Image (cartoon, rainbow over all chains, first blue to last red; front, side):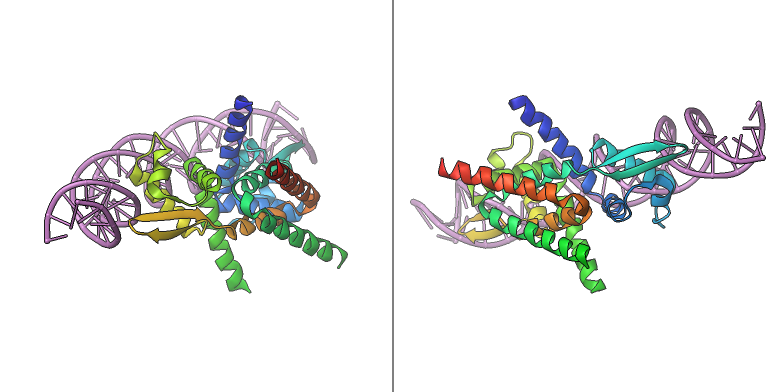
Length: 120
Length: 120
DNA sequence: CCAACATGTGAGTAGATGATCACATCATAG
DNA sequence: CTATGATGTGATCATCTACTCACATGTTGG
């Protein structure tokens, strides 16, 4: 069990470190909105970072398990991986255990808003 | 609206940056578990970081709005602030909109587990 | 096979960051 | 008031990190 915790801890490190960079969060936003997309397309949305930089970011996101890569010919298509979010939510749930209701309220609101947008 | 978004963005930057450091997350864990506690008590739980270092970490957590400070005599008591977690959950909900159900499931499970532990 | 394309990678660099030490501040007990 | 305790802060330093550039790798069309 202790080992599991320690492994989980290291995974947390990678995930939070990956999320700490604004450009990486922007990449996640982009992929989340457009769905699966190739590295080059992602890079073309960034004026201040070269393709190389984006490639490095994608590597970090991939190693953290936040995105997954699929090769199609000369393209590498990136998409959002959903499971790691559980780790983040789990962490928050543990720290904010005394105000979990606020978290669930936020989640429910977000879910409702999403459902609303979907039906619109 | 754009201004609001930009402000929110900057707040996100601070929050995610604050959460990116393992020691700061450990501090949050500690405060979350013990409830309100003074700076020195927090520092005494860390072998590899001096009191000064912990103090600097607390400053970052405070500026990010993740903890709040209350002065009582010569002590400064720190406690968890709950609202900023909403920002994190909101961000995750936006990126993982296509698998929100997984997030809510994780939240519900966490809530249930907590309620279970509470009644035990 | 070869040229053009899509992308990852290694070297190198400027800037951010986490840590310490020494010191400043402020509260309190005597 | 003065010594002690609790804590924050400025200077400094080593390390990490997010870039860029040049190059390597693998793919496809002709």
